[in-house]
Image (cartoon, rainbow, N blue to C red):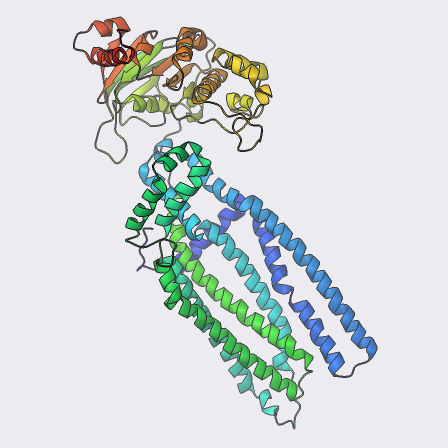
Length: 633
């Protein structure tokens, strides 16, 4: 983790970061904080009520009280224990339910809401991706950041209520005097009270400081390298099963262990040879032990002081247990508060880059014009001298691109990898804005249109599209509520009709088995047809298809091409493909090379242009197919 370990944030900044974090939690899920506060308050106070009645009962027995008094105290003790037990169980159940159901989902929602609201260019920025990955790795490694604030809040509430309960039960220890004439009457001297308070403060400060210093070693240690490896090979191998074949075939777990070993400069992240393990056996463990020793030494002083006052006749012997327990709780409460202050300071370092991510501004102009809802779908897109380079680079991904296409046209975009095809689509869909030039919709710069309205003009199948482990119909409609007849029709048009009839629950059949035991596993080609049906269901004027038949077998691919005009109907289709033979049905073909449109025209005209880029690509592919099939295409 990239932190300036030698620079401590000012305490004012620490508190500002922490207050903001609490506000984020409260806004996202207030009930989880309320449940935690109630549970910790009940848990902190629960020992004191039975402790009070236990002291009264022992005093009644030791003092020779009447049987009625003894039975009354016993009944109150049993009743208080029962009430406290019920309250603790109910509060714990509420807290556990809220924590298990909402803690991680709420954390995820905070960041995913940010990701979905960010400009796509910022989401796509490697620096921001690395920052978000760092936040995730820190959470998985030692729980620091926003998640730590939730735990600190819970601990702070518990510490405060423990102190309040302890004060209520321990005040009389100092106010009840030893009777005059007793050899121990000197315990009434104000100096004794001052000495006990000084010992309390000193032990709390010393124990808290030692505990904080011990815990600070976790903050110094960066175990994210090993955690990255663990997450990749042990979680991804289960969650992304297609990676499991490579992991097993090439023994990549061993590869990772060696890579992590090198990144950690020769040490294991988790084993006994790691830095954290050595610190635990050395200064880290020594400080933790010293903190416990200071607390226990103070407990000894408490026992001595309360025992002497009881011996002197200030109170009954039963009260000794009350005062010892109360002062122990008081010391623990104050010690925990000091530890919490230390944790807040340490956690602020992690909150800093958390807020760096959450504060990434949206700089893309959202526009104000509403796109015209034309029944005749008369839309014209024009790229006018458009150039673009990705943020942080000096290389032009596109350079001086000018072209125009109208509704109903079929435009094929071809070229080698890295030629600018995908960048062209990103600009068309306004995932990025041009660095130079402008893109026009019906003669108006697309930046002037409302961003959400403009996006509604496009239905896109990206090459890395995703289907959800949800019912088939909902995947097609991208919605829980949808038109079932329309969804079935779109699947039929996309070539998925026969497979739909075989689905056990039709449109209600769940894809994959993450959530349903009877979910259906589908092939890559079937997934591509479902994605194509999703495009048709949206019914937008522009369809963008990025390698739409890459996962289809030759027969299914030929079927899609044959029916392509029927599938697209009167919409404008932009079709990206590496297979030039699949572009012949398009009205226009744009050939990209090194970020520029080097040729544009129909298939036959481009193929006839001797020495052109299109002919070169065509000949290279034709030669490959001839070798594969043993004859000319």
